[in-house]
Image (cartoon, rainbow over all chains, first blue to last red; front, top):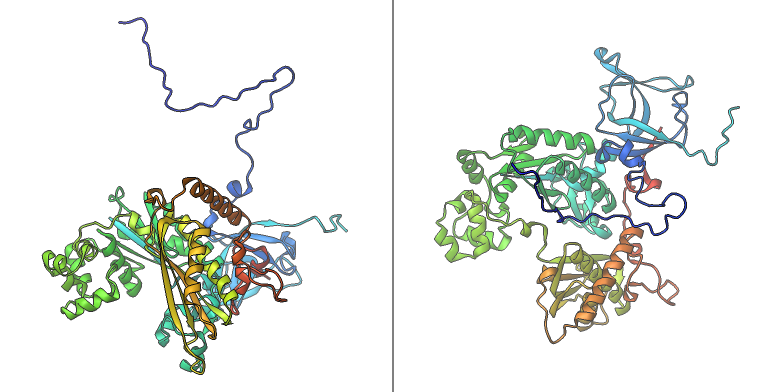
Length: 150
Length: 430
């Protein structure tokens, strides 16, 4: 048995080493220090292919914290179950509501608003209805709004 | 093993994702400038609307029919089909996009799967995620896969996926397949074959190889081999087009050389851009101009001209200059032009350009290449036609100077919103 083995250095790939020519004081500034940054698209949108935007009109979902003018990110790939907030297409237009399937066995379901001024919308076989996608995020522009609660 | 995934009635389906009320109804999408029908829903096909029907004839040909009409919205179609292609890419070892709405998957290495089941599942995933219905054909060769996708589209029983997995099934598929529908058999070859009593793909596949070789050429022989299960269409041939055409009908009539010249410049610049996108160069540039044949009250004129380049190029400057020389040769005063186009052909990879010692100047060549790269980059980041050649600029309305770019000159009266690519156009939900 040999005491030492000699390996040939592997130099086929390049390794770039940062060169600091002024380390006299302080911490070296290097642009490649935090390798990863927070990236909304990468970190929050799981399925870019199936994610779409819709813009909310009206205040029917205000008690859920979704206001007029908010942007909703809608993912069509997400599983949708009773209780989710969904974007649906009903009788010629898009709507954002709670999906209530508790009455499914009776032949209809409900789209429930989050605002006591509005009644739930009852959807049965006579309606043109598609659950289009699940609302996964809302984005609100606070810049020009009055933010202090009244 | 190959699979081809093909979007069903692609443009119409894109529109319907955001207009589910149009499901089950006749829908058509028009070509650029709202000239003629380029995409039809199944219901529109059932009504008898043919591809290429001029828009203005629709009302007369199908009176009383409620037909939903859209102008082309390429922004939407490209975004939606990119999503579809991206989903497919995630499912296969290797994928080759063939056109805006179809692509080939190389399935070797996943034979352990039940491919029919895999295809049905892929269709479901794409439908759920994007709303786009697709048809999937799976077979031993690309030509057979193309044929299979046709059956997947035609027969609902296949659940959007047709898998030709044995010889009996292949022969049955070939017998029912008209020769003119075979991928790679053009209209001209189909005519010649029909004259020889070859009417189905099966008739053709059963002909002796020696006959095919003696009667036709290598390309037709390749198709024959593919139909017999011998994979021989090289992948590199798929993505790259043999010729690239940019043509448009004008919104109005164009009587003057100056305006026509500007349009031709734009078409030529587009061709050059497309060439660079697929890393090709072209050695033939041709231009055609045409008057409006529906206006029988006006004098008619059609002509074309072509020029060969000594050294193949993808340079915007070179191709535009060449196209303008062609235009100069065929332009005649006194006609109302309705349509024009530029075709580039003689396409080769830009890495294998055969240079010519008479006109080749390597320094100039490199300079132009770098300039085009820079322009492409800027236009990609800031929107197409951010930087154009002077000859691409239309004369301003007041007749002084140059203004107004390409895009503004296209007519699209029935264009849907760009639901997925413009903040101002995203759907509203109440």
